[in-house]
Amino acid sequence: MFKNIITTIGSKLLLAIMSFAIVTITSNNLGSEKYGYISLIILGITMVQMVNNFVGGPALVYLIPRYNLFKIFVPSYLWAFISAITVTFILHLFNLIPRQYSIHILCLSFISSINSINQIILLGKERINKYNLVTTIQLACMLLSLSLFFLFFKQKNIESFIFSLYVQFVSGAIIGYFFIRKDISKADNLKSNAVVKEILRYGSYVQVANIVQFMNYRLSYFIIDFYAGKAMLGIYTVGVQLAEGLWLIGNSLSLVQYSKISNSKDPHFAKIFSIQLLKVSTLATLLLIIPVYVLPTSFFQFVFGSDFNQVKEVFIYMSPGILSIAGSLMFSHYFSGLGKHYLNTIASTIGLVFTFIAGFILIPRIGLYGAAITASISYFTMVVFQLILFLKLSKTKMSELLINKDDIALASKKIKEIYIAIRNKRFQNQ
Image (cartoon, rainbow, N blue to C red; front, side):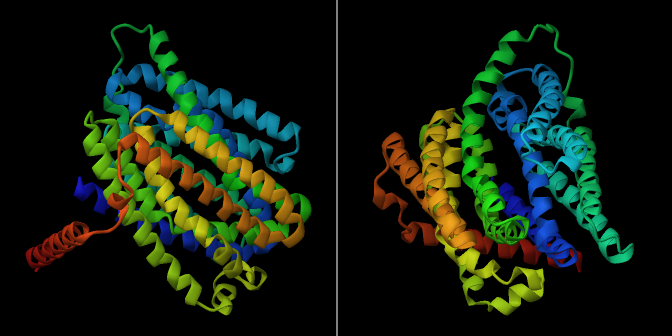
């Protein structure tokens, strides 16, 4: 288990570095306005993914250990095709995506959904290392593709970014299927109505929460685009991506947490394990936030380009929300691992209410900074609600969430284990 956590954190760190490189290359070569268009394209793909996940989403992690995989695999793939066509058409009809890229959004959404399903199956099978490998390879393929287009071929346009997305999703889908192909054995009884009902039941609980949470994260995009235009949206998106990059510890831990709790029947283990990860996630995220405060604004202009001089301020106003999400991830996956997805739906709805109210008050008045403040307000109210639920459900005292001597001793022990393992490996290589 500890090995899976370390491997996942290492993988997420590498992913964060590559993602940062992608953002840097793209922002410097396309500028803020074109980056705004890219933000809406990715937003469209993500919205399709949200609907796809009603069937082929994270709820499968809970169901995979309990049902024949073939009965889960087939409806998930079929739904990916249906949702890609239906949702893209609706987004195009209501002008929520750049219409000239609608066909690309449809195709990319379908491939992305297939890729996601394959990775979720790996997660449900607790093959964390293979999951990490797929996510790492596909992002590396995109970074390589972007570098070739922008730096070697000098094709500095939105189409180059879109083609690189194809490279990312196709490579991930192929490698992911290669890893799961032997698990998909045809069931003796092909009737899978009961399984489909379970997928929809659990998937609905999970995805209603995810969609509401998604609107927490991205409603501000539409408001900024409406009031300030795509150039300001591009600047805000870079600030958000910088902020979300600091969730790498929390995201890494929550993957292992969800997989472990879903496959365990011990509520005491779920509680203790979640508390330990909560402490690590929040403390590590805080330590990652501090250096960004210290770096001068000129550094961010140098890294992202002259158009992005407001990125640091956006990050600063969003930092309380970043820290809140580091804790929220642990609570969310604790509830999901126990099958209580509806609690995340309630928490996300509370956050969305604050996003809606604060967003339409602050963004028209103070623009980018209003969006960042809105995010912090939303995330903070959400994590406070989740904290109250966690304390009540797990019968935990508030004092148990504070770092104590046992936590320090455990951390020291694990650090020593890592050091010894690295030293022994180095000695063996010599």
